[in-house]
Image 1 (cartoon, rainbow, N blue to C red):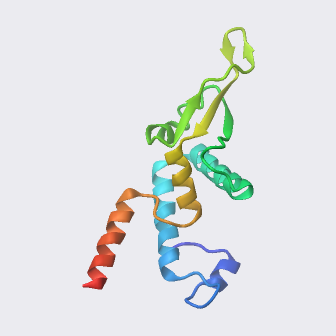
Image 2: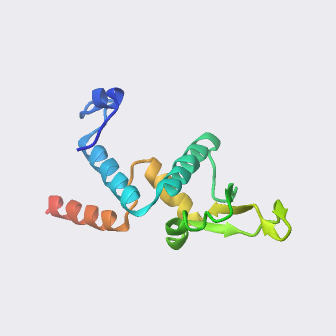
Image 3: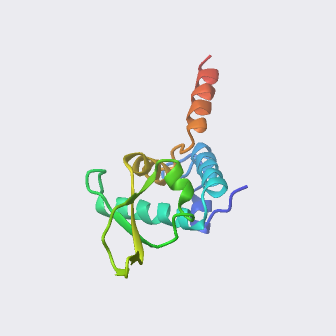
Length: 140
């Protein structure tokens, strides 16, 4: 089950301007990946970046940077491990030799990941393989 807002609930169906069953299933699968893999800070970064990409019609050649507090490396660990986010060298505000902030940016793979998530396309590589198998089965 997936909770929908009243507007999306009314749009559920197969007609024009409606959300079809396949899209709802994909959205649910994407939420499962995000919620099981990434923490709250990581999910917020993904949502923020998705919004910025949509607002600015952003391309990977125009990097957007995110300043996070020192010590957030642990909170964004899985995005970094998955190759979606990297720490960028930055000479920002310091107290003595200790920086107060760290700078991060989404990689090209991270940008693609966020774009796929925002478009309700499969974000888990396993989903793409499974989708290809289902398509092959239905065509046989």
